Image (cartoon, rainbow, N blue to C red; front, side, top):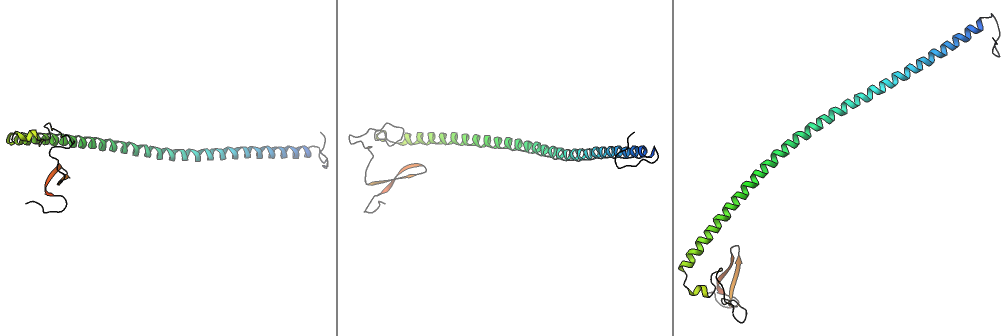
Length: 166
């Protein structure tokens, strides 16, 4: 075997032995480096796995909250629909009651009113003759008509200068 440059040859086996030992040291160091890299990869993998477990716990908690909130929203929706149905039913009853009262009131008014009241259009459901001027026969520019929540009502009194009637 040839001796590397710069080495002196002492005992015939000492150079080979030193070279073999050096090669063994290098191989063992490379093996240690490889093992260290494996340990680092395993540590990084374990760290990533731990983060994954934590995130899965957060996700499960959030999904639980979403489920609870969905159930609560459904309960509130049903309560709202029930309340709305109750209000609609009450409004329908009140409307029906109002219509009955109006019908009853109109029936009494028509029974007490003279026949000429229909001819002059004093009732809203009766046909009203219209004059040639296009005005309603009860129209008088001097009377004040006021509109309120119950509809237009004729008020006693004059519009403009003058004293109101008593």
